[in-house]
Length: 289
Image (cartoon, rainbow, N blue to C red; front, side, top):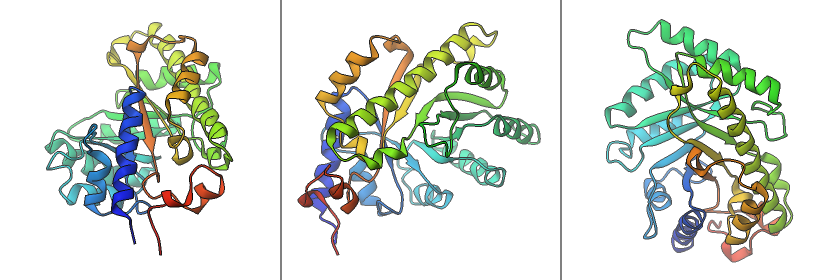
């Protein structure tokens, strides 16, 4: 049984937090959060703000969004496929790319290895109509499960190749620190969130240095998007966390170069794991058996 009032209030609160942070929100739409279209609309639209961007973790769920009419009616305009792409997914993603484009929408993918850059170029050369893939560079937040490590020499070499690619357009930088689920207090989750933002900021700083030295500096004339967040760090998006983050960043980058985006995951339901690590109280759990 889902408490609709509690669910809607969490969506509204997250919109308010994102507004206070002057950030946009990318909401996860997965079977964990339910695939009901009303719930998706509650996540994206409130009396505080609205957004049309989501992250989806399986291709089946992307097709559910598209075929369910959420793209055609303008509810969803931007979908991030939330795993680094395998070769066997490119045909499906190309079909989704074309379907999204029919309605003025965009599908984005994650990139964390030069092999994928090579595969994308080879794939596009075989197509009748060439396109550029809009990508987030996935950063390694420390788990070493996926993502590129922000070591300056290797990372800058990686970005040189990416910026020179005919098949790629860099939209932003993405990080998801899975170890934030081990947080045992709001203060610890806040620290993890600030760490995520720092990691993405550092990546952008190095990318801008590479662009400044590149013959292809015009390939990115829009601010890069910094995409950060998880369920525990979403719960720590507060005015106090923003103050801590602002003071520690120390003006590393011009605001005009950046656009922050938060990825909020299972904040709508919450669960016993979040209760166990003392980030919520029991009444905040929306789903009951």
